[in-house]
Length: 151
Image 1 (cartoon, rainbow, N blue to C red):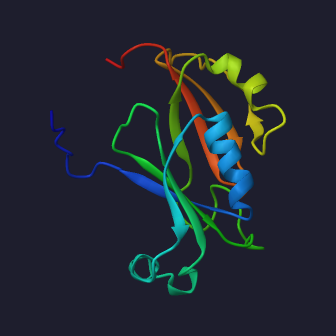
Image 2 (image 1 turned 180 degrees about the horizontal axis):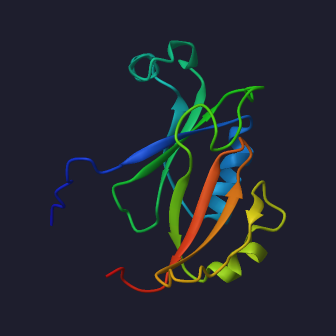
């Protein structure tokens, strides 16, 4: 069965991390994403991003265990001294749907993810329960439990 991708669908994103191996341990071991490929970042891909100096950087591409056609690419780069999560340089945050969001703080203990917003039900918004974490590159990730379909 072929799934048709709708115009405007977000199929993936890039996360810059100072330590690719440690980030892989977090994304695979804690978030449960599957490794699709890894290697040096191809010159043409780096150029297409307007980041030619990133060519040959170590990278890994991951996707959900469901096999859904969406990806997160981790690219190893030094931290940028002026980066502020959700305030500068790129996408504000990633949102991942999880089961049992209240169990996630324990699952993330000892990882490179720092909880900055514990799981919390939001009054008047019963459809999902969010929590927020920062990864090793200070990337913001929302882990959201979908409690019911949004009307």
